[in-house]
Image 1 (spheres, helix red, strand yellow):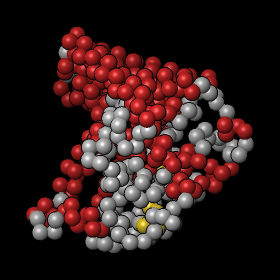
Image 2: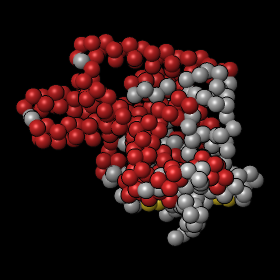
Image 3: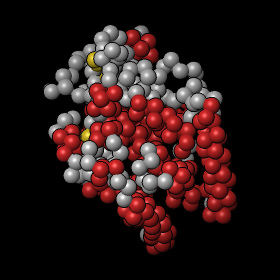
Image 4: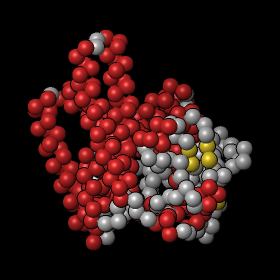
Length: 350
C-alpha cells in the first residue's frame, strides 16, 4: 500500500467538521426564521426539508465520531477521542463504549455467532420466534405489518442495539449493554472509558433539560429531537444495508477468515450527491474501509474492490426488498447466504 493511504490530512479533517457544525447552526437559524412567516402546508414542507437535511448533517457529525473511533480523523489519538466523545455524546452515542465494541465487530466481521450486529437468524431460530401456529405468523408477512416493523426498526434499532445489544451474539447474557462497564465485551481496561461515556451522556441529558426549560419541549423536539431520530434511522439503514443482502455471505469456522469477513459487505451509492457530501463517502467504500481507514483514490486496490458487490439500486428500494427477503440462513454449513421466508435461496450472481 502506498504511504499516502496512511497520511492524515489534518486541514481537510478540521474543515469537514467545521463545515458540518456551521451547516447545523445555519439550518437551525434559517428554520427559526422560516417558521414565523410560513403557515399550513408550506410550513409543513419547510419543516420536512429542515428535518431531512439536518438529519443528514447530524449523521455526518456522527460519521466524524466514527472516524475518530478508528483513529483516522487526526494523527493524535487524544484529539480523536476528545472530538469523537463530543460528537457522539451530542448524538446520544456512548463514544468509548461503542468504539470498543465496534473494534470487535471489525476483528470478527461476517463471523456467525461472534460478529457484533446483524447476525442472521437461523432457520430454527426463525421458526421458534414466529411460532407457526400463531395468527402472527400469517400476519407479519403482509406488507402493512412488515412496513410497520421496518419503521420501528429504523427508529429504535440503533438505541436498542446500544441498550440491550439487539442483533448481536445470541449467546451473550441477557441485557448485555453498551452502558454497562461490566458487560461481556469489555475488558477491565475499558471500564473507565465506558463510565466516562455514560457521564458525558448524563451531562448531555442535563444540558437538554436546561434547553427545554428555556425554549420549551416542543421546540427542542422539532429542532433537535427529530434530527436525532433521523440519525438513528440513517445509521441503522447504512449498517443494515452494508451487512444484509442476498450477495453477502456469512461464515462459520473454519471457512471464516479475516479477509473473507472484511469483504462480506455491499458498497452503495447512498443518496447520490447528498450521501457523498453530507455522509462523507461513508457508504461507498465500505470494503476498503474494512481493510484500511483512510482511502486514497489513487490506490488501485480500492478501485478493484469497486467491481465487487456494489449496488446502485435506490437505497429505500433495497431496504424494503432486503427486509422482506433476507430472513434466515441455514443451521448447517460454513458459508451461508440469506433465504426468504419460503426457504428460497438467492444466488449471489442472480
